[in-house]
Length: 389
Image (tube, rainbow, N blue to C red):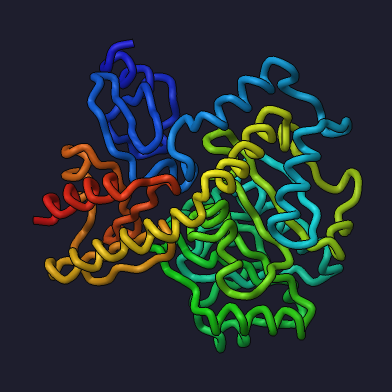
């Protein structure tokens, strides 16, 4: 198809649920993308954190090719080896737990909400936070602390109390005898790259222990090495009761995962929850390749090292440009808050061959692949510098 034919097909045949950027990509490798005209782009925002290994990582491609020639699908009332192996790996690298596989972050968070209600035996209220984002399905949307995503979809699912992020007194004031869980992202991605304070999350863990509440940590965007550790909670010296994963775990293929502490995991038994395509052979084989690549290629160390370098250069930009209000984040998850709307900066970067994102109108987001190089960071910052100038 030619460029205009693609645009016309989308207009005629696809529901307009996304704000489209007028680019048609046809090929990707590492942190590079090529469009239909063979123009090359440096991708510093690969799929909202999906592309932690960049595009078309050879280990993932090889694993998918191998599995797809053997067995594509088997329903979850049978056993298969890739799912067994992947569950074992996730448990090994996280904490004593059991996992439930599904297809997306929203679905994983729906599962966590459903689990909490069953666990609560009548307790059903979940405390969430302003500027959080937990997905587009109805319960996950109700848990999300941003009205702009909820408008028009009322009535929302009851049972959620949204309070100020990093405000311990607000949390304490929201707890009732109906409260069963506290649910949060340790870094709010869609909320503007807001980072949880260590004393706050430690206090939440203590409150949950004392009041027998579940601590649910949404690592859909921070998981699988984004912050320099395999899971973001590992920076804080705590363990969640439930962790949700998605995005980077599949390297571009759809997967979600709910990880529940082993001593409570059997709260959900046969027939209480399901996902037809969750944890299929192909996607599990791909996810195993992702974890193998992260470990074998020492990508956590690279994310830490390159993250420090990226923030060093972003801080230097902040010193030069008054338009930059704050630089924040962790590892290779960076937010650059501006005093102006960021849309024009994103567009200017795109024109110069750099793909970044803007959230909350004024926060630029840079989330390059974990195998990003110093040279690629230099190029990205050079383009961002030109755009700001």
